[in-house]
Image (cartoon, rainbow, N blue to C red; front, side):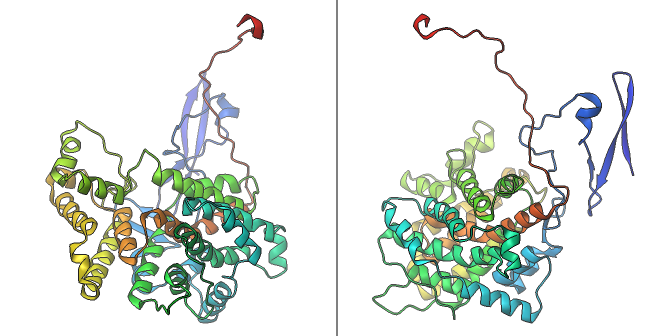
Length: 432
């Protein structure tokens, strides 16, 4: 085993090194405090590995992303969201009978207990679909009160149950937000087709999901399925470290997604495009202060600091959007006059060809193109993160499982650097 040798307080010490599959080395500081009394400080955990994982891997230098060793680009081209979900959760590509049984389980358990409809009736019409989804995911724990291990002994995999039901909850959340009656799932429909049918069908007239819509949703969900230790996955693993049940951990992941994607710190792509349209702002005017260094932009639709080169998901989602857009305008020529889409294409053209932005590795990313794909699917912006939650769920389920089955598992308990006052004397209320 390799070590880092150092001296502290006239004492010679060694920090063992751990090596990953990619030959990246990590300093194991588990015993640093016991040996030196020192605690490391890493305010954003950007230089701290919190787990050994076999689920996904970002090849930053070469701009590649792998799920269980498989290139995500190949999965998008050849796989489906259901098959990719099986890969992430169970660790291998399914055989034909495994995929058939898995798909049947997802279809069979997509129905929600009828009493859950009472929850929907309790939400105001203005409730955000993501708030409804997060609430109902934690509510499902009431219907599966036993532990994961106990349920597995009975032949019930609650991970599959949740993956089956989350699309129903998401679609019903949307129906609630627009005041339409809910549509029940149909077991004979594939995963994404079933979801789109619940989203857009109504009792008043027949509805058929276009196969190109089904395909593009499958592809986008695969791109969201996992991305190492991002904020949402880390949140799931932190909650899971305390042996919290599955539904509580996924609820935490959804809430983390809400914060990281829709807070004031980040401007979603559609919001940016609307602002440019409403205020007649050109891409050159919008980005000029950023390019000159006078202003910082916090946009979640551009670039990704996990990659030295372009995020492969950005390249794939760009290709998916362009092909889908061409097909949609042939069916509905009115999209050619859509202001959001036209402004998006204008921004893309400017950003992709500006020499300074190219040098900064500033490019439209997965968030940018997925927002446009969702628009073409007829999905409103407030539902975007709900759809992303469905896409991220297989990765969350895989990380929850890995965390729970880790024999060296401990509750995460980070330290702090205290900067407050000490030894203050209490002053009675009447003297303040």
